[in-house]
Structure formats: C-alpha cells, structure tokens
Image (cartoon, rainbow, N blue to C red; front, top):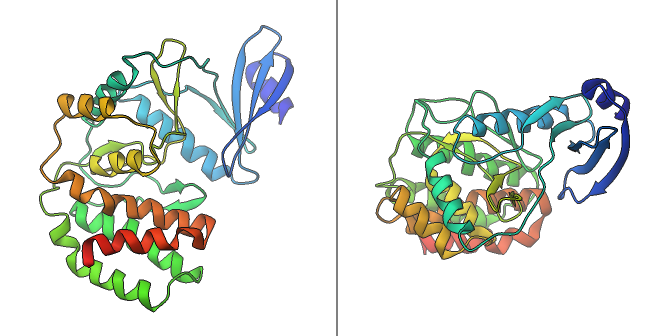
Length: 281
C-alpha cells in the first residue's frame, strides 16, 4: 500500500503512525520527505466503501458551506485524504457549525436518494433515486430495510414485529408536515464524525451522503450528543425548522438505532422498542 501511495504522491514516505479509526476502519497519518502529512483510511478488502466515502466527501464539498478533507486518491487498499491539523473550539464554534450546517442544507436535488448506494457503518444504505414522496423513501429504504435486516439477523420477535406493524400504520400521520425538497445530508453526523480545525472551524468527516429531509440529519446529532444549544439555535436562525420537527426526531433516530442493532447486536434492542413505543403506545 505504501508503495502505491508513494507513486501517487511522487515522493517517498518517511513515517507512518496509526490512529483510532472507529469500529470498522484502520487509519494512519503518513509523512513524506517534503514534510507533508496525509490521512489514510482502509477497510480491509472493501474498496466500495472507500469509493463511496470519497464520493460523499466530494458531494459535501460542492456545497461550499462547510469544510471537508480533500480527496486525493482512492486505491484498491485505501482512501488518501488531506490531513487536517486539529485545534480547539472557541466560544463561537457551535454557532458557526450550526450556521454552516444550515447553509449546507440549502443545497437541494429534484429526487430523494443519491446516484449510488453507499454504507451506514458497514451496513448497506439504499439510495436508489426516486421522485416519490420522502415518506415513501424513508420507510422503504431506511426503516423497512433495517427491519428486514434485523429479521435476517434474528433480532425480530413477536413484540418487535407487532410494534413495527403498528408504526407502519401511523407513519404517514407522524411525518405529516415534514414535506420539503430533497436536501443534501451528511447522513451520519454524530460527535465522532466532525473535527475542529486549527482555525476553530468545523470539518465534516465519515459521511453517508444522500438527499433527504434535513430533520434526519439533525436527529443523528441528538442521538449520542456532542452538539449544544448554540448549535441548534444558530441553525434555526439561519434556516428555520418546520413545526413539530422535534416530535419527529425519534422516528429518524430509529433508523440509526436499528442500524446499531444490526451492527453491534441485541444491546440496542430495548432502545429500538422504546423509540417505537413513543409513537404507538
């Protein structure tokens, strides 16, 4: 892999250092003879996930609203990215982040989805473009897909099935009032998927990009924390959210909790059931 990278960069790599890469990736920082540093990610033999991540970063960068690492190359073994020096957040960081994230959500498409399927963690994320309603896209390609995956993985019992069937009947009424044009989404924005750069500006990393309802992006920010009230108030000042958006947040969280159930096991079962019960009980 290092030999390929030297050919791409046209200079010798003099050092490599391993850093934490999350639950599914291996990550390294490499340094070349000229003193330049680069960030390298690998996912074993899964080249598709490398290309999808590169395509997602490139799509986010087109918004010109919020910084992302520049994609340098994708090989069969790794994704080569710009290395971004990290800094400390200042008092204005959260407000800047909220404002920039709202500006990114101003970028729209004429269809929900994306030009390719990609991944949410290591699970497939189905993005087949469709001009149908958001309600149809989110149910079929997000919740129902994950439910069927949970069935295959042996996590669906009679309680789960009964509650999910009830949720399906209530689904249209829950999402009533959420109709907006398809919006550019990061797709997996939690506290571990952004950086603070040397100028105390936000940097988006590890996307699962598609065009959908922006409330889905905001729901993920609330699932594991990492975003304070300044972030949300600045976002809402820049791009006001529709009525009852907070009521719908749990429904969008459900997609990610189901995904974690399928990725990491039954420890997420009770949270899955609890979220569904907030709507059907």
